[in-house]
Image 1 (cartoon, one colour):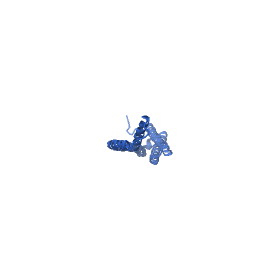
Image 2 (spheres, helix red, strand yellow):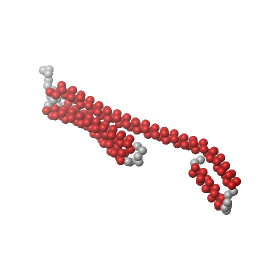
Image 3 (cartoon, one colour):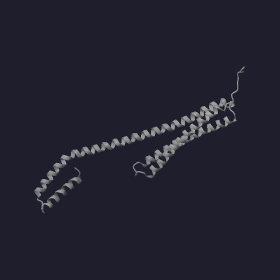
Image 4 (cartoon, helix red, strand yellow):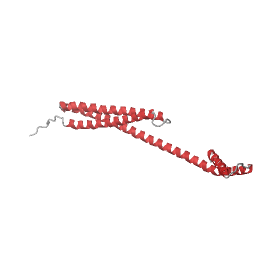
Length: 199
């Protein structure tokens, strides 16, 4: 039983006695009431302790759940950023390796498209790297905002950086898609000559 509950029970009994017209309370009846109140407190004490322990465990479980979810979000975000950098960098390297042996067979429009495509892939990688840095900063701001009121400036700045990071990653994937379209167009820009005389 909580201290406030003891006081409330005592006040309730005093009001009850007052409503019955009593103006005085004998020491003997007060001692009997205190003994009954003590017995009630002793009876409810294990329940109060169990409720306190249950609340502590529930809070600990909720904290661990939020922490695990936060870790999952961070891990999946890092995987998306790493894959974006890997896709863009790998595509740019593969395109450069391909173009080093095939550039002689491309017409002028194909060469311009090849240069643009390598530039687009490089921009996609740069956007993904900037997004990675923005994600790191947003996590730092969220950490600084822990324990402060909801929607403090750290949370708002962290949200802005998080949305910036998401936008940059989406732009980088859009640039990779555009680069794929350009590669498709480059394939049509080859000047293929017949090396084996026909007929």
